Length: 141
Image (cartoon, rainbow, N blue to C red; front, side, top):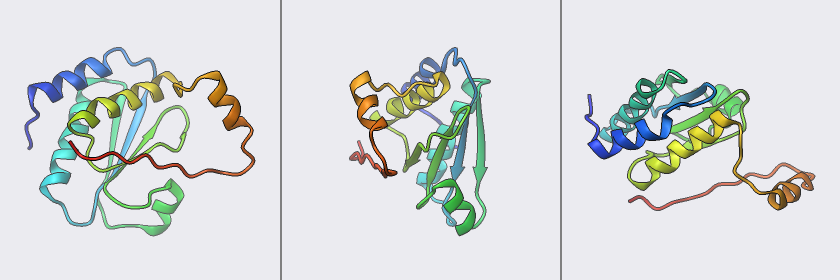
């Protein structure tokens, strides 16, 4: 098992304290495990241990194109963040370094059922007439 740093554990414990509603993290692993996916899985398992509101589901078997297409998974490793409903949040890569706090914030927002968007942004999104695919890319830290 991969050990977390005290900083990682603190970010997880503090960020997931008192979640109001359950969140399921569905982890799609690649076919070939690596040290990176072991570290990623350790972070997700620590999150599940930190809150009784977090459920971790690991899909570690071979790629299932039909299942992944239904779930909106384009590649692995991937994490689907599901609350009371599936809002389409998919996280690719390892949420570590500065990204860990961002990922924990995403999990909290899903638990709270909020997007974090202001009224103006919500109004612009409501005006969209076709589906939009949005990806936010960050550089590793």
